[in-house]
Image (cartoon, rainbow, N blue to C red):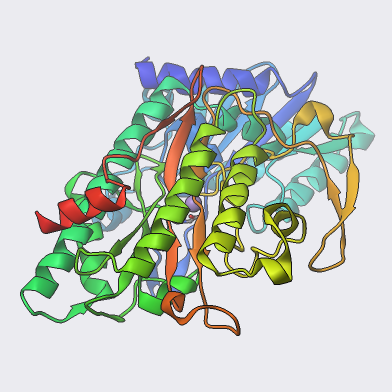
Length: 463
Ligand code: GLY
Ligand code: MN
Ligand code: MN
């Protein structure tokens, strides 16, 4: 067995050990999806399935029993299909190639599952993630039920296997961290390339569009073996940066604009997620620099708060503290109207300028799985009234950070024209996002191959 296969086998064994006596888990990969007429979207495997197999073909399903027996259903060999779509592993080769105990052709899943479920107590599968899976399981259980009068036992419990897998995926192992570091490095190089292209084109008097910089990102991703972007890249010029879910479109990038790029590649199943905001021509204006330095200071505070033993929410609180004071200092908030920084935080007066959270888990999925509540404290609930909406919010203790967790740190400021908002800041949108691995003593930022300090960005863009 290869070292990768033994890693997947260890993960499968850890799942088996948590299924309980008589348990069985069914974990399918993702479905293929039609894009239009006879074209499909580029296929992407299911992250849970990949985590347990490393197998990327579509039409596959893994079954694990509590006793540790693993069965794979996969596409059968088919000479004609393979001419069109490429080689398939096939069930005969799968046990040796992937280290599973048995493998069968995908089409026999429907007939093999009822006997595999017979005399089992609990069936585990991913809830609400695979369209049609619940009704498939219903059908298999109905087939088992039809045999109870002959003495068969039918599982009487269904449980969400994601509850097990989410916790496992939250702590990354050495192989995962190595892949994520490499993905982060590639993405950082792509941001550098986009910054330099922007300045070079403007210096040459060329018309620059958002898609020109998107092309640089894609080039760098693929050039270094990334399979695809980990999510839809954002390349937002000027006022477009204030639209949080803007994509890379055809907007003109003008001299004097800021450009916000939020883009990261996926490498061998793992995401990276970087945002940089830079002056299109390589020189920040005064007001741009004031807000940029404020966002960066808020990120520095968040980074300092990102360490083992801290709660997940602490980097966000550190960010908000710096932004609240900064918004008062630069005149985006008026202390005669909103009070001091503590009042700004308590009343969430910063919200029109900073309306998203500072972090999310990162892993195979860009917004990776894993509970944001500390599992041992889910029963501790504190109610509070949200100062903006008046709604009652139930707070549970935030997750305690541990070595091996990976999260983003991504503060921002987005200034839309509004009464009382100084004109010099209108339409400025800034986000700075890095990926942090929790270490034994703090955190490691794995995305810093692209500079983040304003002076360093300017120097890079002059080069
Ligand atoms: N790129 C997605 C995010 O930053 O959450
Ligand atoms: Mn992010
Ligand atoms: Mn992002």
